[in-house]
Length: 212
Image 1: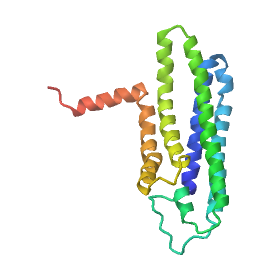
Image 2: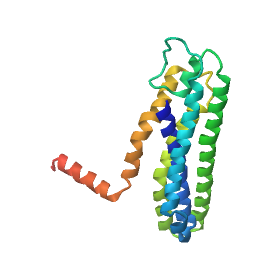
Image 3: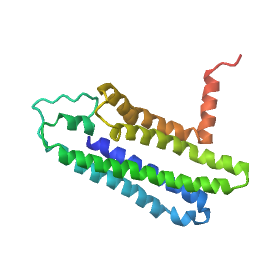
């Protein structure tokens, strides 16, 4: 649970930092080297990991002080927060408030910042007269937008959507997206934008498929 929370919170913060990077590159290109210096990037990465560690430590400490059955069986394939909380026999109120607060802070706030960044980027795109510039900007932002949709979409449904009507199977499928499918697609989506990687893949396919 601790590792899951650290990685999840850090990824959400890093996606927000990447949105800011694209905003600066497109809307304030002359100030890019100053606003996105090595020191600024290091600070954003460090803060992302620090927030993940603090949140994971807080949640783990609160949840595992609750009373649980002597032999609890979690109806899940990992120790996610909500399935574990459902097993507690008493004293869940404080942990539930903590989870809801973290959900608002680390899902809604980063997503709102990302949307704000892309609204500004859209305004800058519309101000550009060149169609080639439009394509270049959309190409730059497409991979990030896809990852934001996958990550925040599944996280919102899992942690914000009402839980009363959800089934165990639905929870497992959504967690599968968060824990396996999205991380697997992450490097694929970003590396396929790299021209060298694309050329290498084409070369590999040509070698494997015999010519007619």
